[in-house]
Amino acid sequence: MKALNLGVLFAIELIALGAVAGYGFTRDVPTPLSLLLGFAGLAVMIAAWALFGSPKAPRKARGASRVAFELVWFGAGVAALALCGAYLWAAAFAALCVVSKTLAVAWEQ
Image 1 (tube, rainbow, N blue to C red):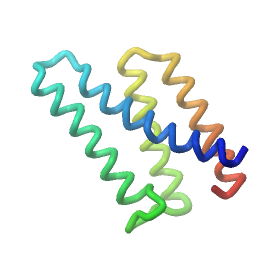
Image 2 (spheres, rainbow, N blue to C red):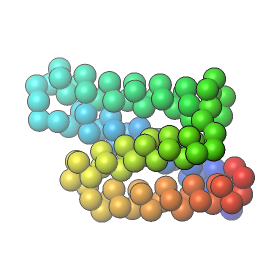
Image 3 (cartoon, rainbow, N blue to C red):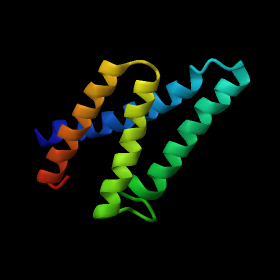
Image 4 (cartoon, helix red, strand yellow):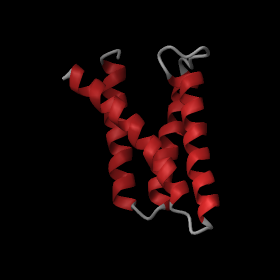
């Protein structure tokens, strides 16, 4: 079960990245601007994870700051899905994040 949860944790990280990028790419704006929005959102998410969220991050968030970071980071994925009109997917993703992160804390992953 613990190994499965590690896979789910990785999957929700990728889903959050994809949701934010997808939101940028699907805006009803000229194509160059939608590309810029999609790649910029992806770049910001990757940079934030590399600096604060990754296990090898130079300034790894811990304790309450980790909780706040993950609420914002995964919340951005949920918000992006909701803003695209995928409300059920956003709710399912939010529930999956809560369950998986709760198990990760309980199992010290």
